[in-house]
Image 1 (spheres, helix red, strand yellow):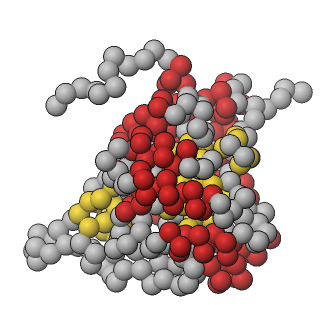
Image 2 (spheres, rainbow, N blue to C red):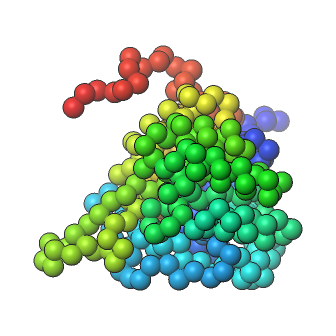
Length: 318
């Protein structure tokens, strides 16, 4: 019998059956997509960002389609930790889903409180710190844009949990590599990147922003080249640190590109709005690709770094 190449990956202490996961904020709590795909077949799902209590988010309008993606200023709306533990997590356990709990807060104490509230719950594989949301007045990327603030927060959360700790980085940071290094050296097991970039859309008739928050987070195909570059840079600067790539992924070639850049796993985000079954399809397509070429996913990770080095890290002038 011919052995089928493995899709399994290891993100530090976190073992996943395959590298296809869903991005926080684009997949609800997972249950909303149960009619479209087998959630247990995914490597993992990342929940909506959880705060200690319920949070209403920003007032509408808070989503705006763009030519190559979307702007959102949802503002981290969520049901709160208590409702998630009582109503969402039990059902996810029944379905056999690997759950990564994305958490956020306004101040360090908020993050620590949420993580501690989740610590004794059964069925959470890892915690992902959202230090990069651009759509809130406090917290979010205010932590992610400062390496010292990143280090302080990550160290405090690291002391509050024994679970694998993922830190979601901001592409809006002045120096993403330094932010990544600060997170890793302070206790992050895995880094996920990138979150959305700050963007804006204005109604030409009213001359007013299309989003009530004014600005929003740009996601989708428009940001993929930037995301690939950032994953590549962080992988090159911090070899051996497990990375999850995010940004404009919608087909198999996108997945392969992020893996080559140095990501061990990927998160599917905006594409879920167009095709709610996309993540399941990508698992099947990646499996077929690996079987046809007799390679494991682990062999695909970092191929761009093993190929000929580019002439310049800076890229072309323009």
